[in-house]
Length: 257
Image (cartoon, rainbow, N blue to C red; front, side, top):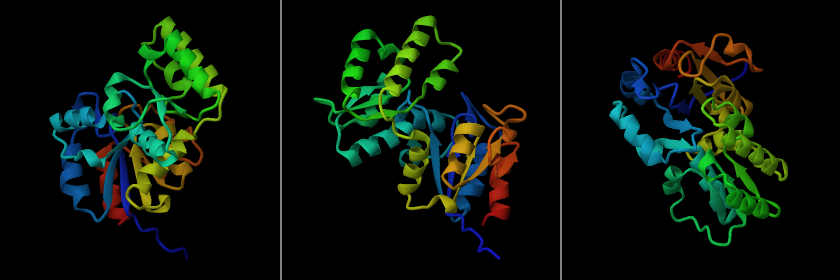
């Protein structure tokens, strides 16, 4: 009989899992504070947003009644910064202005790398021309794929055209495998392997599928982005599908510890 996997870490998605925009998922504050916090596991809060720095995310979570520390939040910006530091490169930052605080202290003079986030307001001709120039001989860290842009229903025609430019930019270079790197970086920061961690999220493809592709267990919750039948859209299927975050926490406490 195979040895039971010892759970050491729980990664929790933010928007759609703990809260939906400016409303907390009912019972999620208590499930975190009274239940999950009492378990012998490390908890990290992860999100693939590239439009907000951790400070802004923390302010929103605090307003909603969540007791979370800034160093417990891991974002796509965190992962990008870690890679920039590991590779000792100077980036051209194609990111939203609100994301810039998370790159404080990173040298950006004479760039030899390009970081692409969700920032259509910066995707004008001059900036894109500069990005193409650097991308011809520099690595690109793509925090949002063209698919992410196309799915934004509020995009105007100009922004859609700029998303096409990003697609050409990314197709011209070898991009970092961002989803795999994201989860591995989050776990590396707490000294935990994928086999000893579980991810809770509302996005079947990115949250659950991405986590399971690196060897984690994925719990899908039927809140936020979830739509009926999502659990059948990835292979392997989610380890578990729950109604919400509190139910996911109950399962972890009863069956994984």
